[in-house]
Image 1 (cartoon, rainbow, N blue to C red):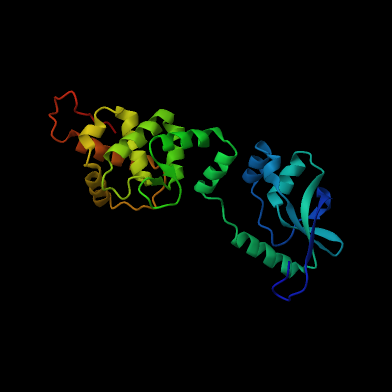
Image 2 (tube, rainbow, N blue to C red; image 1 turned 90 degrees about the horizontal axis):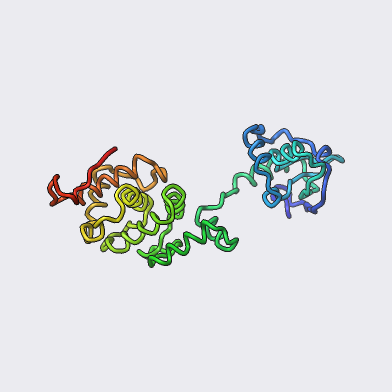
Length: 263
């Protein structure tokens, strides 16, 4: 690794270091007790990774891993595997810390889902089966049969169950002609809310060729942002209500097919 400030060579190695020999640094963020508690309570060796330290002036100065190091001490660990950097000044360390956290990017839901499939995670495997069975796929493509909002699918299967996800995708597949955003999150969860409340009933027959109009009508009414929070209970109820309103059009209030709405 080359230091970009003065182009001097920085060496690195990996080795176990006694936790009591690692000193905190002035540029570190204050540790969050709740985050430490979460690490302790749900400790996983596979997620610990390497602590990053700088060997300077005969001491090991912690650059990254403050929460993990405290949690490991609480759990009784005496040593931690570390990425040891040499040749850095304290200014270099602080810049390393800043750039490392500035460039840190959390895994997106789609990345986690893909990794879950390879790891044979039960929920991911069930989702994969249901999605494919209904003629869809999960990915980043703009193809109308591709679901990019994995988080919405996760929300449906966790809150409503496998059957509701299956029925939701089945209904969308049979009613979404001409819809550009039929698999975006508000649409998916709104239909799932309908299925949870009313079942399949005669949804496909009554809503065929109407879903595009319902969606655009809903967006116009709500002036809805596509960046709204996923799983918002108010948004899913509002879209579900729009579905019920359109489903009931042409039906008498006394009809057995008429759906009653309850907030």
